[in-house]
Image (cartoon, rainbow, N blue to C red; front, side, top):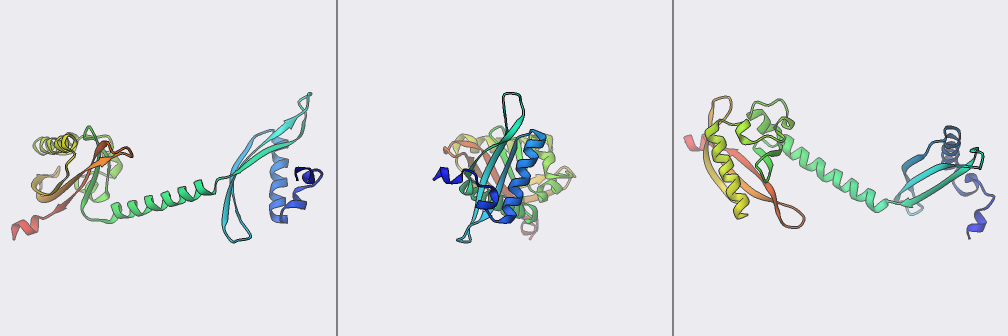
Length: 210
């Protein structure tokens, strides 16, 4: 029962390593008069890792003297596991984008780039993929090519229909012209509405020359 906790210390309830930490945290809170917040992990007796969010603050008497510590903690294992899974997915996506030789892009409804991969940034003469974020095709491609890209983007947004393997002769900012096969797909939000587009362009110049 809660009454059984009265008069005990951390050393009565937890392993020494944890009790040392909790006691040091409490002492620091009372001495600095600051709020402490952290997410801690513990391995349970079943071998599973449990994540707990902790919030502690000093307790004052009527004369503003610190007389103790108050705290609350709650289990955030499910949230933390979801964050780990999301981080894993991001790592996999980033690994794909960074290493695939094809040009990959994501855009919003207005046709502004929200992400491109390293291969495309190099093809555009950019130092990093981040330099393309928020920019329109007209800011990165020659005018004629940009107009064609923006028209294709708008048709996809309006129809919601993907296009596969569309072959185009594309002039790049360095003046070279390359044949590419472009696939575009609508980028949909969680509610199914179209939030933009994404796609990949594959260089088929050698194939076309043959």
